[in-house]
Every structure is written in structure tokens, then in C-alpha cells.
Image (cartoon, rainbow, N blue to C red; front, side, top):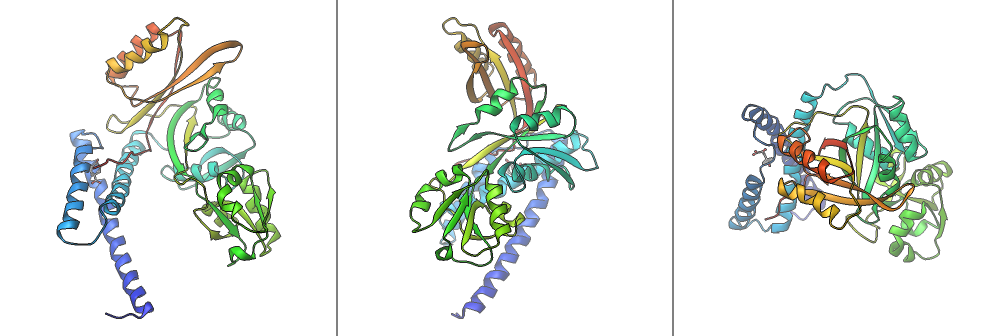
Length: 385
Ligand SMILES: O=C(O)C(=O)C[C@]1(C(=O)O)C=C[C@@H](O)C=C1
């Protein structure tokens, strides 16, 4: 065994390449699986198979004395399975919906490098190679661009694991004729970005939007003699630091956004709370067709009467039809003090007989009911063993 670092690194590089080759082979098998399931019409997800697979891998690693932590093995394979499910899902969805060959336009809040911009890219890379990106100044403008036909899609954040629901977007959904056609989760990973290869100790000024500063407060408090200067958005902070091109300044931003401005990562993992994820929705003029084989969500907007138990009556309909509710949100109704509008997110496909029946019953116990959209769920919850 050699202890020469460069030799060890060569071995690591070779192993990583071998791993990549195997991952690519496994990825390609997802296409064979989905073609087989197109014939049998089986659901794409088979949770029992996933559990069995993970358990067997953990047991195998133990039996072979591979010295790998079971949690590590589980996490890696959960991620591999997620890729497999999403690959299969995209294949079916792209086949079912005629996707335009030419470029697709998308509207989002903020400038290049904003989280909405990065989420747009993540979502639409499955659909089209070529994107026309329309940055907007408000959520309302995102809706308007799609309503007027200036953009094919609008991307909007709906909730964040740290700060909760984004009420403004919920409220705008009440007044639009657009429909939800997709969702995705985007991890928010704040980092310090600077010009060139610099050290944290060289930095005396950090430009940031107040929200990331708040979410990274513990890290910032630990920095001695660093001035915090607030900007309109993280994109503005990144742009400014890149323009000034000085080595004593930095921006709080995200790695991918930083790349767009030519900035380098100085420090990562600086948020107070790990696992900070924003869920985005995608809106369009026309609904998408969703294969009955993929995990589907439906978002409803409803109001109930004011009598006792009115909401319970409505929710009981889902229980009766064995439909899982993934979110319930309430918002005030404009012009009707103390009355509430409910947003109900279901694990359901609007075209299934079961959902149709539930909606028919729901109509009898609600005073207003509107389907805001039915879309494939891009959020693959990992199975636990
Ligand atoms: O075996 C299947 O049915 C697959 O679709 C493959 C696979 C996997 O990647 O291993 C992916 C999704 C299913 O939930 C189970 C397993």
C-alpha cells in the first residue's frame, strides 16, 4: 500500500470513473423498465420493491464486511432510485404531451441567478434544450406574462421548509385562469462567493439580501470585523461583487448563481438550518396530461359554509375515497372578513374515476370549488427501511 497522495488520488479518480460508468448503465436501464411498464401499465413506483432493494443492499454490505454505514448506503441508493423514477416519469410525460420542438419561454421572479431562475432551468431541462428566460419584477408579472402568452410557463415559489407558505403566490392563484402543470423542490444552499481564489479572512464586506443574512445569522455573527451591506436581491449582490471585482468583498448567494457571475465559492453550508428547500410550482395556459402510472398531485381551491363541521364534512370525502391529502392551507377571502378560502393538495389524478367521484361529492358540501391543476409530482419521497 502506497501512502503517496498523488498515487492514492489516481486510484480514487479511477474508482470514481468506474462508479460513473455503472451509474450510467443503471440509468439506461430505467428506459428499459419504463418501456416494459408501458406494456404492462404498472405504476412507475413500487415502494415494496424499493424497500426490499435497500434492505438487501444494507444486508449485503454488512455480510461482505464492506465497512459502510447503513445510513450512507441507504441515502446513496435512495438518490439513485429517485433518478430512476424521474427518468421514467419524464419519458412517459414527454411522450404523452406533445412538447414543442422549438425553444420554450419561461417567466420567473428576479434576475439571472435567482433561485426562481435556477429552479426554472432545473424544471425545463427535461422539456427543452433551448430556453427563453424572462425575468420579472413581481409574482404578479410572472402570472401576467403567461396569461398574455408572452411566456409558455411561469415558475413560482409556493412554500419553503424554513419560512413556510408564500402567501402572495397563494392569493394570486385565486384570480388566475392559468393551471398548474408541474412542481419541483429546489434546495436552498447559501454560500459565500468571491472574486478569484480568496480566503474568508481576506473579506471585510459582505453584500446580501436581508433574508439569506437572517438564515445565515449564526455564521455571520462568527465573522470578526465584517461589514454587512444589504442589496435588493441575492442576484444583485452577486452581480455587484462581480462588477466591483475586488478581493476583500463577497456576496451571499448560491453556487450555481455564482457561476453565472463568474464568482468562486469561498465557504459553503453556512445556513443556520440545513435542509432548506423551496417548493416551486409551474403554471401554464393549458393543462398537461398526466399518465395514470405516475405519482400525481391535484390542487383544489374551495370554500365551505360557515356552519360547525363544514370543513370536516369536505375533508371526510377524501378519507372516504382513500385519497391522501398532502397539504391544507387557508387564506382570507378579499372583501369577506373572517371567511376563509382553502387550498387542498391531494395525491390524486383528476382523470381517475375515484377522483372524479370524490369531486362530485365534494361539490355537494362546498360553496365554491375550483381545480387549480393536476400535475406529476417531481418530489419523490424516499422510502425508509
Ligand atoms: O423495478 C422497478 O419497477 C423500477 O422501476 C426500478 C426502480 C429502481 O430504480 O430500482 C425504480 C422505481 C421503483 O419504485 C422500483 C425500483
